[in-house]
Every structure is written in structure tokens, then in C-alpha cells.
Length: 240
Image (cartoon, rainbow, N blue to C red; front, side, top):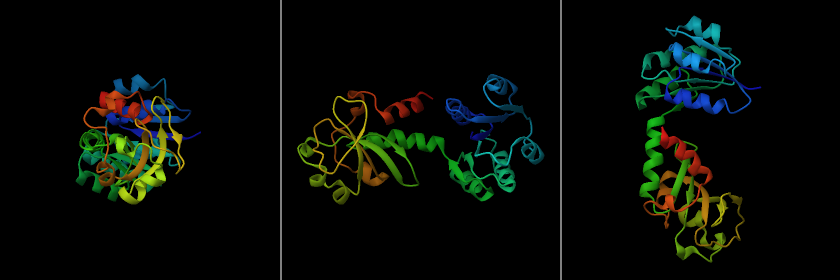
């Protein structure tokens, strides 16, 4: 069974914890707020209250064999950097740290964090890109400049096959799957699939190429359609 350590339970840390608790995994939590720890102590494998994050505390509590350690110490930038370094020295393989600023993120990486998360920046991008794009309904970043997005193409594409539309050549976007009009689930799609009005495509590309796709989504486009895989994910994020 996989094992995870959460050091600090800010908004991001609590959200990660709640998601982890829906899976069959072992979770260890550590936070300086006793009330927060007590809220979750009956649902996790181990729970600790620590007022000061010290190297000996981290070494004593966090097993070096954890599959990942997630750090969210709020605005305590110095502590998050130190903890990242402590975990790196211990040999923890995956260290995920929440950053407050670009500079904070750079220092976290130098200190040993293998993954740096910018929740505020990513939330802003998720909001803005679908607003400015003509075709994008929702999107999910999967790399530094690579996203998976839900796209609705304009009516001029209706009746064409994906081969004829050639989105890869014309727009540098790769189609992965399609959700046909009136359906809630995606299906893998073949190159000979004929595009129909109302189809929603799951596609991969750079932020710029996805944002510049022609489309019919427009302002408020997402609200006209039923729930989708990415739509459900993003609606939870916006509720925060």
C-alpha cells in the first residue's frame, strides 16, 4: 500500500488530504494546529502536532520510504524551504511543495523539492484560458506548457473527418477522445471519425495553440452543456 506524508495542512494540503482519503493509501499528517490534526486523526494512519518544524522532528516522524511527501506550510516560506531540504537529505524520492511566489518555487527546487505547485497561478490560468479561447471549455495542465483541454469546434468542421480537419497539422493540436452530443462520457476516437455539431473533443497541445483554436464555445459556453470529466474537476476547484 502506498504511503504519503503531509507536512502542513493549509488549504492546498487539506484538499490533497481529502482526495487521498478517498483511496486505499496510508497517510501521515503533521501540523502545528492541534484542532486541524484532531479533525483528521481518526481517518489517517498517523497524526502529529508540531509547533516548530525541526530536522530531528522530520527525521523521527517521516519514513524515508514514503512514496511522496507533500508540503503546505502556508506563508511560512522559510520553513517550507527547510523541510524540503530535510526530506531531500533523507532520500525521500518525491517531494511536492506549495510555492507562494516564483522566487519561492525556485528556492524550493534548489532545496530539494522534486515538484513545485503554484495553486493560485494555476487556478487563475484555469479561469482565464477558457474565457479568452474561442473553443476551450475546460483545461488541465500536465506540464510546463502542455495542457489537455475540452474543445468544441465551430460548425464549419461538421461533416469532416478528423483526417480532413487535420488539427495536428493546421493547429498543432492532438485529439485524444470525443464526447458526442448528448453523452456524458468520452470515447477514444479514430482518424476517420466524422465531426458533428456539439461534439466536445479532448485534445492535447501547448497553452498557446489550444487557446488559438477556432471554436464555437464563446463566453459562457461551458454552461450550455452537461457535466464532463474536466468540468466536474474544475467546478470543485472554483468552489474553494
